[in-house]
Length: 212
Image 1 (cartoon, rainbow, N blue to C red):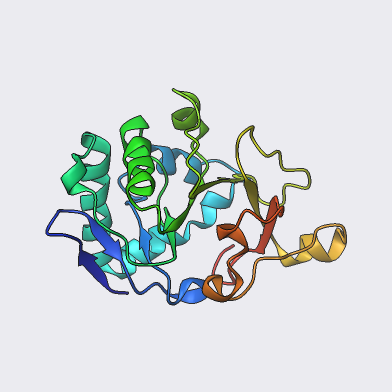
Image 2 (cartoon, rainbow, N blue to C red):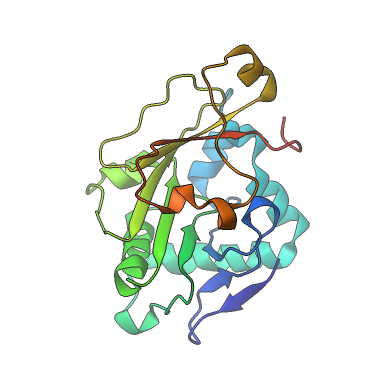
């Protein structure tokens, strides 16, 4: 997994993701540093108990350092205009690892999108307190996706203003509940349904085999 600092600023972009996100660029923060993530991992029945980001950070120490750096930079102050890097990709993911830290972090991600109209961004979050504390910011090239915290949520609710709701299911659950259709593909770069205003409001994924 490669990382690079953009425009000479202290913001680290992950530009060679693994798994279904091969070929994608993303901006991530440390799940280990985030108190919200810690609380979610300790909650029974939440998908966060099988946190892939935590295991990734522990396996790849450079990723841990890079994402901890982003955690500090993005959550501590609103970045100046000249600190917002230019993103040279058609689609880009916010928070493939980690979650929103606070309102400052959220505003910085919104500013990334506003400064890069050539790119479509998608933001995954479970941290609704951050969004509700000031409201959802609508930017035409930013797709807000609510990531359901509960594993096997049969009737996930899409919060007002969010384009999509993303839910994770176990294979035994989907075998029992035929109404749940898994439509998360093996490759984000090829699929891109999360990065389009396409009328698809529910994205369903099977839990990673390495999870519980």
